[in-house]
Image (tube, rainbow, N blue to C red; front, side, top):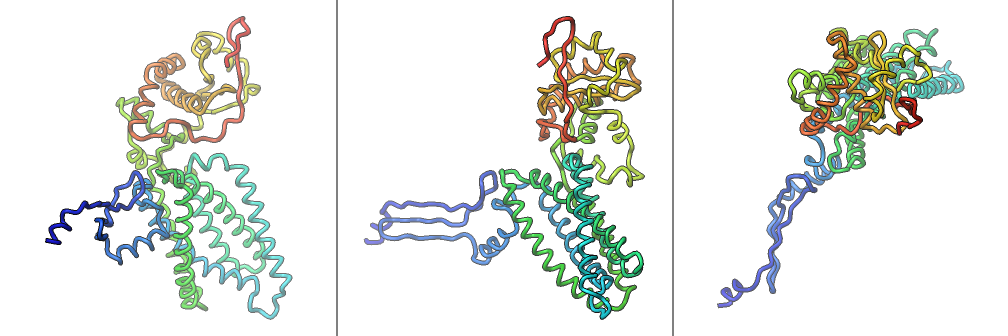
Length: 440
């Protein structure tokens, strides 16, 4: 009788689910309460719960739904290349300390201190110069500069390993290695920030960055242990040291290449814009970020002998955000005719001379205007040589197809808010006709 009364008591049931918004939630427990008792039925094993807590120290909260699909393969390859770097650093550091004179009776503290100071000073100066010349292009070519950064790090390690072989040129080699690694620090840090923003689907860039620090720390600890073991095994055997170093370097370069090839960036830069535009002009359809990632080049143009030079040549034929005072009357004259009517309401001007398209941006132009001006310039370059009136044809194409092009890109998941390119620092405002009406 008591059992029947208990069965008839009102029951309050609550299901417990784990996961952040936008992810596939998993049920972890069911809590049932009556007026006389509380029962908890956990659907997750204690070992599984412990594993999830350990994993939570290395992956963002809400993983995997809070990051893009390319996050896992990139991090796997990136951790492997990092592990290779830390192992090789033990070999190169051992060689560098030997060259400085650690362990030698003839070595002086002041001499070693001065050499180390000169090494650090050269690296700091190199980092400033590299930022000055290339800082604005790091964001627009994150894949390429990611590879360049690790290649320069490899070159710096080679310099450290070579330094004991040439005592007379030790300081020079030491500074070259530090200079090379300074490029690595700037390029790697800048591209990492861009990639973190790409991975973050739930405004969790800070969490992703923090968990990446944990991953890097773990890889560093493992790499240090393996590096110390390898340094001990190869001690006194230069041939074994060089073979180990070269094998690890080759693996490091391969892992870096695979890592950047995993990335499917949805932002528009110069090369991705050209690939998308050419496909749309020929088929009327837009490619997805996954399709474009397989087509774009990740190796620098100056070391990629096999890559197509089409993108590089087109990019050289477009000058975005030029200085008006550098233009000649011959270049500006075409705007006095029919072009003036088109650009009266536009936030940019297109000028063409000897196959080079110059883009003048308005002082009030937005990121969307700059993107449109670059797409217009690409269309202009594509039509040059095919049509006698490329300027008029390109304007007609923009008026007819640009909005449809942008809409189809957004449907495929592209970010069409801005163009990733070096900052446009020169702007202008203009008027047409005899009136003093300013284009604002």
